[in-house]
Length: 237
Image (cartoon, rainbow, N blue to C red; front, side, top):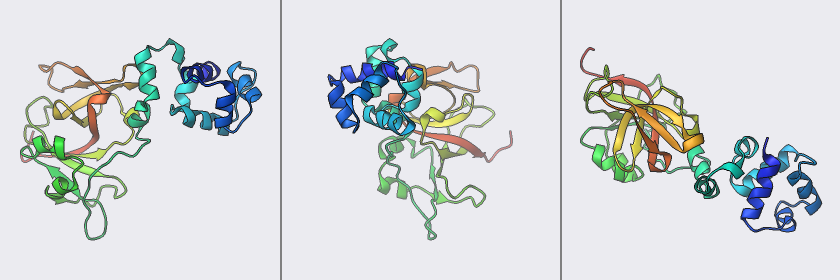
């Protein structure tokens, strides 16, 4: 566990004295000193307060020696990228509802794909998409359908619609599952995902069709992630 080392390291990066940080945490300098020197461990409520103070998850503070990370990675943590990945600060998601105030499933056709990259947070754009509902899906979750193109995810055919569940915490991505990823550069892509966010701040995107090579994207280039639930096709495989 690296909590004591990380507290001292992050405090010094902020150029705060023990007295200043203790004051911010509503504690005493002697208590903070005991944490930094591993003489005592903070109780859970104080550990959570320290986590909130640095805006870095408690799991990271406990398990990762931040002193060994490159400066760029520590800087990402301090700028709140981890909170962005985990959805701690609510992302804007434009949605529509039916007469019972239940979220519709909006349908993003192939023609709407290009506009979606720019309009995914625009309620006017989203409200103009076709909308439908599937009564057997969990009403507490948000779903959206996307029309895929190409043959990279066979046996799912070109022009098939895939209905997906909105993913808020990107650190929860499961290796090998299929997701629709909205990226800054490539727009909407549908791939199998392998999660390396914790180590490299990247995810690997893999096609079912082996003629397409896997590739990595930086998590900072991701705008939205939707987990595959089901697909709708007009043809039999």
